[in-house]
Every structure is written in structure tokens, then in C-alpha cells.
Length: 418
Length: 158
Ligand code: FES
Image 1 (cartoon, each protein chain N blue to C red):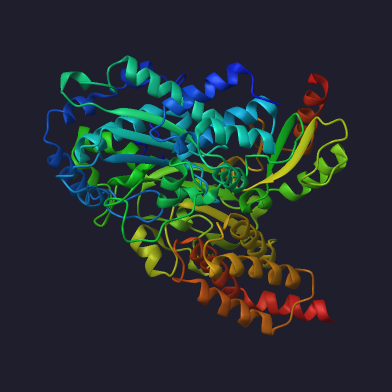
Image 2: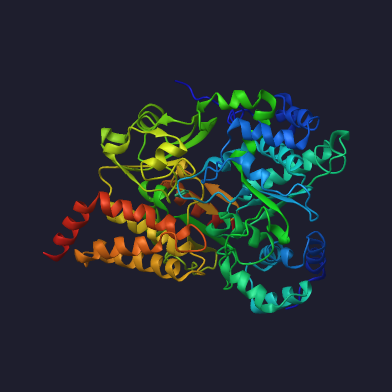
């Protein structure tokens, strides 16, 4: 079965990133249409389409937009979160580099819907090429009258600015991102207040992911019902799945939400190299709980994956074959979160450091069986107790690995001591 | 060393283009680092003065973000991804290879001052792992041969 490409439709085209290419495939017609509709109706359409945030949380985009007070005296901001850095995720980078106008058109429509006149695109510093493409696309959009004052003679004004980060995973957290744009350390803010009330520079702000915004023009062009007819009733539309790790054909695959995980790996990913067996799969970026080989017959949508004790997250699927040491995997992940913890909360700062240390000791043969329960205990203390979800993102996969692969840990510990 | 007038003008231009002076800080630090290769204490003080913000804000931000260097680095910086998807496809072997080839440990700079080798966290290139960012260029699907080619090119280019 071929992919069902909506967002990725033109990414392979020569010069796909230019405005000429975008216009030649009907680009910016959704904006033209949207500007003739009342802002509240646009939000309603997005709500009706069922579009859920593609950045990881899966929160309905239209409902989020509705949180902006309609009578705000303060300016309203929209920030596009292009800080893609969840390990296992590489879907936004393609949009940024190969079809940026799609996202920009989505941003303009979103701003019109929430009555924002200033949009930021926050891209991570490690994507210099993407930043170049985005800046070029913004410039082109200004030249063609899709940005600036009185857009397409509608009376609607919008300025758009690219903000380039400087290396910090935590800036992908929406309030960490806002802090960073304000010129500070990317330390997440306690919530409430939510950004829709007090966001960037103290003003109402919406933060949406790149892929979420790229869906918007298609919804406007083809209608909410069309979008809602793809996928499953509560998980609508296509999703860009990323396959990495031990698969024959790693890469991006755009498919309806609800695709079966085994089918994704076998049919689209071409199975496991060397005919080896799957040992574990991280279904939604590194912060998601891993599945063992017997849990893979599952629909990849937000609700089903959550019900199975993990999360769809960014839908970055990382496959691990039977040759992998789950102890090393856990250690690799703990290292990441320790490295990226902003250090505000004790449970996170010390928990991630401590998990890495104890996992390293186990790996080096210096572990004890009691350590396993101590790890599980530490993980439970890290969950739901911090300002942001980073500590949870560390605890969830590690807890699942220790629980599901406990035999491997125990065997390794015993061998290390013999 | 005071900033050259061209850089001072550029900083002013960036400051004017941002909603608050503090929000110009990260773009300004990037500009200064582009000029000198790293952010010395003197540079940071001068940035604080130019933006009229407390020096501690500049220090805090410079040390928080991994792409800002508060110590001198080589002319070229290699960011080799170490995170899971790259690790599953041989990043560790590549790191050993690079260390041997460059005669450094990760985090160090080659004796000729040309290359600093650093570990990066996931570069959003997991589908084309292993990946490495060298200055502004991303290299994907790396092999030892490819890594050697990149190193040779840098050594030749000066
Ligand atoms: S893990 Fe290396 S690029 Fe994602």
C-alpha cells in the first residue's frame, strides 16, 4: 500500500521549498479562502476536523485556539514550535526544509483565527539548513503579500519572525520555548497560568507544532469533514510516522492515524535487517514507554497507545532488534535526560543523574538485584511531581524497560557478580 | 578586545529588531560567537553593556545553551549524535573511530586547533542515522569512510 500523502505530497519535488513550487500546486489558496470567513468559523472548522496536536500531547488544536480570550486588550502571539528534538523524531525537519510554505500558510490562517498579529517560528539551533529555508520562505511570503500589512487586501496584518535556538531540548516544552524567545534560560514555567492566558511577554499565546500547523491549509481547502473522515473517529487525519533504528527502510511514512504498528514496521519499514527478531519498540519518541515484541499488534493512534500504557507522542518509532542490550538502551536514554534536564526541579535534576549512574553501574557489572526496585521507586517519584514533563519522559521509558526486561537485567547483574 | 564597529552596528540592528532588549540576547550572542568563535568574559560583558542588561543574564544564558561556547573551541566543531537511534546504528563505533583519527577524546580539540569533537543529542536525523553536524552542515548515514573523508576535507581546507 502506498502512503497517504497530504503533508508530504510535494516533498520530493525539485525546488519543493520555493514559493513558486508551492503556488504551482495551489499554495496559499487556503489563506485566500480563510480570509473570507469569520475567524471564529475557522477555529470551529479546525475543531470539527478533530485535528489533534502533532507535537506529542495530542491536544485538540481548535480547542486550544479557543482558549485565547476573544476580547484580549493585549497583543496575541502565535509561536510555531520547530524545536524538534525528541529523540526518534525527525518529521518536522522535512517540512521545514522541503515544504516550509505549507507551515507558514497554516500559521497565517491560525493567526487570523486567533486574532494574532505577530507570529514566531522557533527553530532549534542545530538546524541551520532548515533555518535558512524558513527565512527564505518568510521573505518570499512577504514579497508576495501573504505577510505584512493588509494581507491580500483583507485588512488583516501579520508579522512573522524566525527565532533560532541555541541547543536545549527543554525549549521544545512550550513555556521553555517562550522563556527562550524572551532571551532567558529555557526553564519551563509552572502552569497555570497557561500560555493562552499569560504567554509570550505576558500576553495570550498559542504554541503549535510544525506538523499541526501544516495540516491547517488542507483542512481549510478540503473541509473539516474530509479531514475527519481520515483515520479513526477520535484520531483524525494522517500522521507522519518516523521509523528509525533496526528496520530495513528507515524514514518517514505518512499514513492515517490508527495504522497497525506491526504493519508499519513490516510493510513500510521492510522488516528487521538480517531477518532478526524485534525485541522492543519505542512507539512515540524516546519519552514513551517501550513495547515488547508481543505488544506490537496495536493501532497507532493517541488513545489506543495511551490505553496500552505508552503514548503516541511524536510518532517517532524506534525499533530495537534482539541483539540490543536493554540495559544499554536505558542507560542511553537516562544520559539524554540527565544532559537535558534544566535543573529547576530536584526530582528531575537528581533523578536523571542518579538513574544514569545506577544504570551504568549495572551495565558495568557492578549492579545488585535490589537496584532494580530502587530504579522503579525513583521512576515513580519522578512522575507527576515536576514543573514540566521531562522527568516523566525519562521515568516512563526506563520504568517500562526495567519492568518488561527484568529477566535480562537480573541475568546481567548475576553474571556481573559471578 | 572591544568589538569592531561593524559588529556593534549589527548588535544595535538586532536589538532594534526585537521586542525587548533581552529577547535580542540569543541572536546577539550567536553573532558575537560567529565573529570570535566563542564567548569570552569580555565579550559577554560587552554584550551586556550594548544591550543594557545585567551581565549575569548574559552569563546565565551563555552557559545554559549547549551551542554557546564559553571556552575556546577549534575552527570547526563536530557534533556527533550519540542518542538512541544513532547508537543503534553504530554511533559509538564512529565516536571511537573519530577519537583515534583526530587524536582527541570527545570534548577536546585537535592539537592544530582545527577540530573540536563534541557529542550531540538527537539531531532530528534518526531516519538517516548515524548523523553528525559539522558547523552548518549535516551529514547523514555516516560510515567510517565517510567520516574520514569529512576530516580530510577539513584538514585540507585550513
Ligand atoms: S538519535 Fe541521532 S539523530 Fe536522532
